[in-house]
Image 1: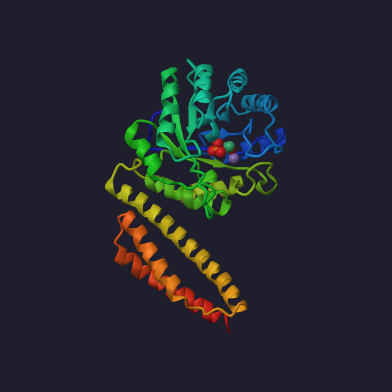
Image 2 (image 1 turned 45 degrees about the horizontal axis):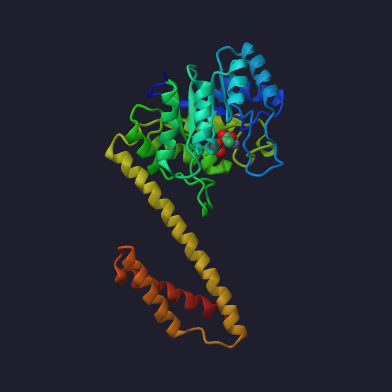
Length: 348
Ligand code: PEP
Ligand code: MN
């Protein structure tokens, strides 16, 4: 049984196995770093678009099997998405498997995997589905538990929202916190690589995750990240992983204290404010386009009727959302004034 412990569980390794040499290189580096509990390596890759590198399948598992005899102390895990993947991975002595985000989102697929894994005691890591639906995540875990799979670890990899710009997947920390509240004994680790999407942000997301109190991390690590066949932008070198791990300090359990709940909420406020500012910038860009059209057609910058309609409309929307209309009017008057200023400045 994988149980929650004070020492974070660290899983690291390449997004995909690309060659035997690449696998050996990264595995040897990770062994040298120390403190890595398990090497992750993608063998079957679910790709959003057709035509990309989809993993080397059984051949990669044969390389893992050969490597394991040289590194008996190291454990390896791979993603499984279909029952035949489970059968093949177990036949080659895999130490753990994970269910990827796209698979968790499909209850039929999870049911088939649970059947294929029934009765085996290796850890099964369950990533959240791409949508922020805690029930779908819990449902996948329940399907595995119903098949007597007891070594379950949840992996938070963020959510694919339409407007993600800075991060590849929005962390929406309240969702894994809700999972912790519903299943207090379940270990939950964080995958900062798929949340960040860019290697320079991995450290920051990993630090936030440990500050909130996750039970560990899954980090993508490649000997030559720029030339990786999948997820090149977010993978980091083993050396960078070592630096990141040295910089992190584990905390108490996820949302065990009010302070951690506050921290999680403040992180979300920071993210909302960042989105507000990005939208404000976008709004001002639209105003500049409007300014060009007004100038070309000799139309006055200030259109009081349009301004009045806009303010009335925003106040109505505020009321519908339970926000004080006067407060919203004040904000939009300021925004409108800035829009006029920008349009006038562009005239000179
Ligand atoms: C992966 O771990 O490489 C992967 C495909 O992740 P996810 O299922 O979270 O997208
Ligand atoms: Mn990946």
